[in-house]
Length: 298
Image (tube, rainbow, N blue to C red; front, side, top):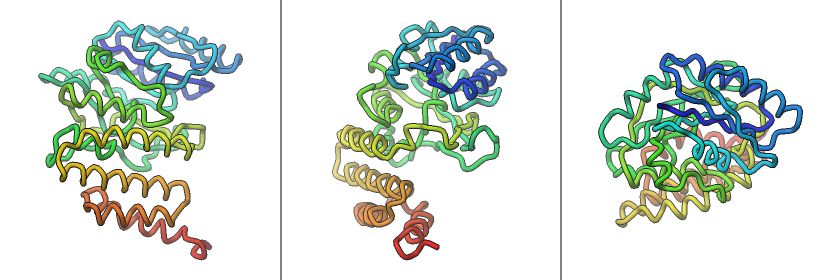
């Protein structure tokens, strides 16, 4: 049985879309657990009403917000399924999503499956890029994943309940990157299956998200980068992982409109070890950083 776990806070409108996508699965989930993580009174009423009219769904509520990681852990503690399927309340799935993961997880030694996802804004359904790719064949899974989170977010992942509980679930102490941190710990205990089809829509609209907070993003990456580097055993692995971390910092600086440090991290990454990701993305990042330099803006 698959248990779908959905944390939410003050997102009744988006939760309706997420729940509808779970209800539309060609191979239905066994249960749906929604965690209201401290919503306002009016939103809490709306969320409760949505859950009540969704077959197979039940509601947990935190009176005060504990964060999405704690909400997911709370749902996992209540889940009865052998497989946990995470879905953020602002994202949604295509109807074939759970069916594809059932097949992927049936392979021997697989503890986690993940699929590609399409980026979209506010539910428009128009693609703005695709995230998620297979791990590099050059490195072991833990080392490849230590470099960067090529898998994407929780809404693209299913994990066996046994594996999830064996590593202690999400780390609520992290300000961001809780998903990547979990993938790293799981990668040491089993294989991952990659589903190439884009089966998830990720809403990257203007609503509040962890990824829009520069402080949370930077602090989370700093902590997880330190943990990830410990998975690199050889000098070449450490050089590769460190170069990937520098490239991620370059992209973070560029995203938040800081072109000078973005260029600095970009150069350090390429000098340390020109990774495939850096070579692929360097032209676009270079153009964006130069465009945003003082005196270059129009």
